[in-house]
Length: 536
Image (cartoon, rainbow, N blue to C red; front, side, top):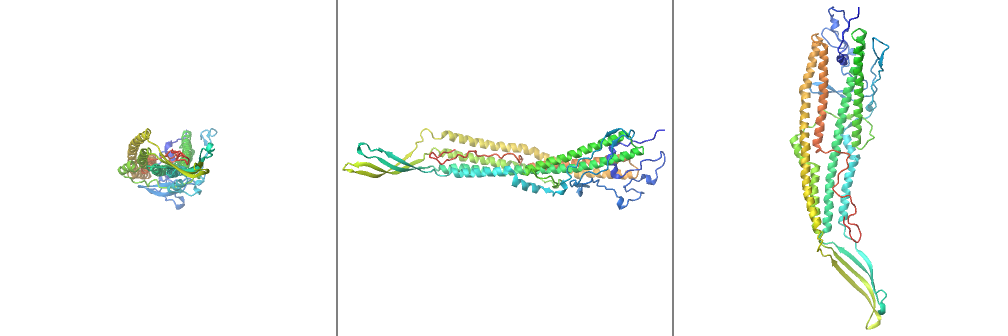
């Protein structure tokens, strides 16, 4: 007579071990004894209470994983500490019990890619921001642009160098036996205050570059904050995947025990082993996702060689923003808007200079020379020393710099329109981001205050009914799975809330490793110290 067996739904096996293993075999038709209603490790009416040594580990800790208890709404959750060693969970060789020689695969442990992380001190967001301020190359580049404009302003205001030279006329003297030879000094006198106006152009550009430093700082900080909370969410996912892996491995052992007493067969075992192997894959992928996000974070902080370590942060402590005020602040106080306003000031400085440039400079020349021509009254006595001087100025008849003046006016108009464009662009980006923030905030709050407490209570009620034999155990598992899925969704909502809040707080700026934009020209050949006093 073939043995009788009862098939337990495979998807329910993943969490069975969390509540102990019920009595698996009874004689059909026999009434259950009081002890047969008891589950190992479960406190139930009429059942013997386990001693302290026998209390089950309700945290479902994996080897090498530590947990801290935190209150998440009306439920207790765990915040992960990184694994400290490889998985040592007991495993079995994958095979079919009906055909023990039919091997279906080997049982390889899940890789522990983060086993050395726990030995290193955890880092907070403030630690990464400090590293970024010290090491991010784009911040140093932005400060170098400020110094470049500062020195160009200094160079633009330098006075032209004087010229000295030799002058000679009728050097051989001819039939008179004379000749004039001497030296001179020549100086250009810059009129119209043009030097001050030229210097002012670069001073205004320097102020624009200073705004650029602020802008680049927001870009770097925004990316570091985003990467930090990406990594923190990934670390939480590692913890969740590790919990699932522990449950899946426990289910594999349980289904083999069920098979030993005729309660499971080969399809049950194979399906459970598939779920366990998939849990190993998911756990490995979660670890690699954390490694990826941590390396991105380290690169933004300017230290790509930083060893992977745990993070010290609170995913639930989200900022409380007034989105209407944030939208107004983004449009009016953003460094991008400040820079666009400063570009208008730079263009106005160029117009002032262009209007003054037609004013000619005064050329002064003076010298002393010796005249060897003999005096008519005394043929033996030369004329001797004599002085000379000259002054000249250009006449602005045809070139009055009129083209550059009109070009400067057009540049002012362009800068004004660019300011309007930047403000509209920021509003276009910030408005949807503000709505996304509000949506994620509402969703996270609902999960914490409404969904998770209800799911927790439903699970408790189903468990209580099962303990009194008034509810089937699969319904308990379904309620627990629902609770777990809500916790995962809650973490995702918190992550989304953080991302939107960070974007709004940093004026929609990003690109922490993009080269800072300069409003100054890269040329360093302004006002060369030569006779022409070249201007760029």
